[in-house]
Image (cartoon, rainbow, N blue to C red; front, side):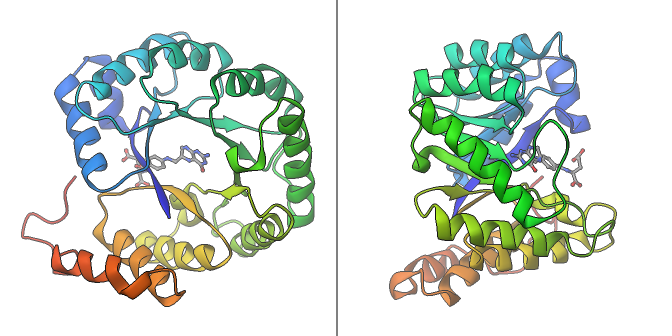
Length: 273
Ligand code: THG
C-alpha cells in the first residue's frame, strides 16, 4: 500500500491559517512527520482561493522541499496552478486529479504526458458521479483511452472510484468495491486509490468506519490511499490486512512495526497532531 499523506490541505482550518500567514515551520513539521510515517507522496492542496492558488501552491512546494524529499501529490483541478507547480517540484509529482470531463482531459493529460507524471483519475465526468459501478467503469474506460492516446500507460493511472459517504447511500462502499474489482480484472497494470475519510462523512465513530472500509478496499484491490499517515490505528489496519492477505513475506513488516511500538497504547498526549 502506498500512502498519500493528506494533512497539507488548505481546506483544513489550521493549514489555511498557515498558508495565509506564511507559517513555514507549521507546514514543515506536517511534512516531516508524514514523511517519517512512510508516505510515498505528500498531497499538497492550496485551498479554496482560485486566484491565489498558483502562488500558494508554489509557496507550499518550496516550503516542504526545504525539509523533505518525498515526492508530492499536486491536489488541484486547475491546469494553470498545476502547470506553475510542476515548474517548482524537484521530483516527478503525482497529479491529483483529472476526471472524465473533456476539458480537464484536454488541459491536464498533455501536462502529465510531457512531464512523465502519474495521474489520479476520478470516476466521474462533467455530468456527475455515476450511481452504478458499471457507469463508473465506463468513465474510467473513457479516461484510460484518452490517457493512452497521449502516451500515458496504465501503470501511470491511479483510478479513484470515489468513496461517497455511507450516510446518504448505504451501498456506496459496495459501488466503490465493485468498480475497483472491475478495474483490477480488466486493467491489471492500473492502480487504484481513494480519499479514505469521505466514506464516513456525517457519521459517528468515523475512525472505525474508515479503518474497516480500508481493510475491505485493500482486498478489492486498492493499492494506494489518501489518508492521515499519523493515525497509528490506520497504519495498524493496513499492516494487519496485508499480513492476513499474504502480502507480508515472513511477516517482516508486521514484526518490524511491532518492534517500533506501533501497536502499543498511545502516550498520554495522544497521537501526534
Ligand atoms: N480523492 C482524491 N483527492 C482528494 C480526495 C479524494 N483530495 C482531498 C480529499 N479527498 C482527501 N484529503 C483530505 C484531507 C484532509 C482531511 C480529509 C481529507 C481532513 N479532514 C478532517 C476530518 O475528516 O475530520 C477535517 C478537516 C480539518 O482537520 O480541519 O483532515 O477523495 N483523488
